[in-house]
Amino acid sequence: MRAITAPYIFDGFDYQLNKAVVFDDKIIDIIDIDRLEINYSNIDIIEYKSSIIYPGFINPHIHLEFSSNISTLKYGDFMEWLHSVIENRDELLNSADDNIMYQACIDMIKSGITTFGAVSSYGLELEVCKKAPQRVIFFNEAIGSIPSAVDALYNDFLQRVDNSIKADPKDKITPAIAIHSPYSVHPILLKRVIQRAKENNMPLSTHFMESPYEREWLEYNSGEFARFFKEKFGVTKAVTTPKEFIEAFDSYPTLFVHAIHLKEEEYQHLALNNHSIIHCPRSNRLLGCGRLNLSKCNNIPISIATDGLSSNWSLNIFDELREALMMHYNQDLDKFAKELLKGITSTPSKALKSNTGEIIKGALADFAVVSLPHLPKDISQLAIQTILHTKDVKSVWIDGEEII
Image 1 (tube, helix red, strand yellow):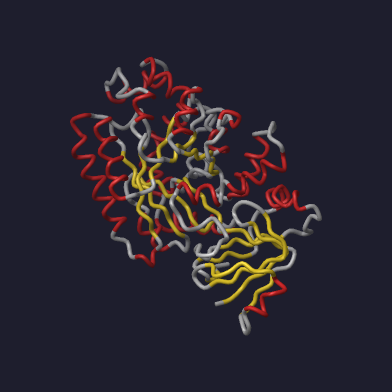
Image 2: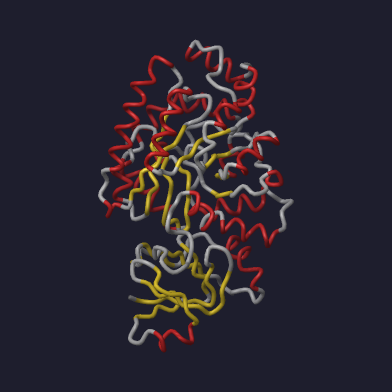
């Protein structure tokens, strides 16, 4: 058992002054600093000056499989990017060896990410995730819209899920399930996969309404996706509608990734069914997808993620927070900065059913310690100054052990 102290801690919701956190592999107590040695004699105390202790940060959505991309893929328009992915997919997958993917994990931990959600199409990164120092929510992704292939696709999916379930607990892998998108998953496969998530109480995510082309195809069977599906697969009709797709998740809270091009009733539907949104600002900008309409997201929890290096230039969570801060220029600066920090701590923790993201008794002892050149005197400025002035964190703790 030991303790860490700092002028401030952020408990996942708000800042507290002059507190100490007592822990082993879990948090045992949060106590006033001046009572620490009275209540806990002979305890090992680590004091961080000019610092803030945060819960370990959570990056809930990343694709490690394309971690070798630097300047291969084309940015500016979603369809042009998609065509470049298909054209270069084999090269990128083959070049993203274990060393490159592991380095991506290490790059994340430097900015305080102690948990990440790895979306896996093929299961190639499972061994890397087992070796990573972080906790990993391993999202086994279902994809495939051809009816005759549903059984084979589902069996392959089940095998990948089982492989992640069999991971040793010391590897800190949490099996989870992802649906690729409404335009790429057949309704029969969708139903089976959602049922699997329910039966095993697994976190569930899906890409939804990332680009305007998606709605045009799903509602009207027209546009750039119509040309794409006809050319690549000989398909002229979408397998589902937005309404059918979103209603398939009604009885199970799900993380909807991107969700930029929603209609009013779809925002309401997400809120009423306890779903949440994962917002990836830099990816959305680079692929020309638009900007999430935060004013429409009332009562919908929003987490922040980097997405993968197929649509980003870094996995640094503070790079992402700064982009969000500037992109959503109509938000109150101080309040929004705190919401963004909640979006990488307590908000994704709840959506992912994880015992992290908060500094409370009983939570796992995962921390990210941020040091600033000068702590602001006004506590309302802590969130904004943290986001503006942090690139790498001072220290990272996972399971009560100091990693950095």
